Image 1 (cartoon, rainbow, N blue to C red):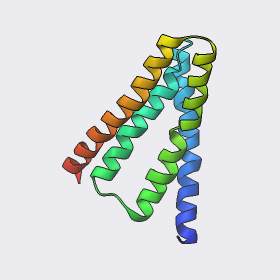
Image 2 (image 1 turned 60 degrees about the vertical axis):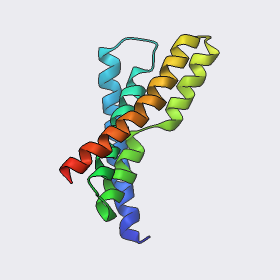
Image 3 (image 1 turned 90 degrees about the vertical axis):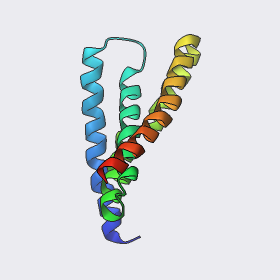
Image 4 (image 1 turned 180 degrees about the vertical axis):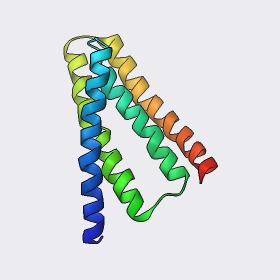
Length: 122
């Protein structure tokens, strides 16, 4: 991988992290809940958008910038895991199950949908 690709990933990651913070704040202001809705929305939308990129055949530097950099920083597996553990520790079993089913199942379905949509655009 070239230095240019490292820069593409870094730039994409910078903007992806900023967008994640902004989207999180917007959602948390509108939805007052102990359920981790912001992380769920971010990860599901990221699954769809990354699927669209893959389906449309985007690769190379553009994929490094948006797919690896931006989407890698925008979506957040570590926060998802932490919030799942917090739901478990708070003995909120139904919410934990719902969160996992929606995150994993919804993420896979939206990624597949994104790939099919991407094929239409690509």
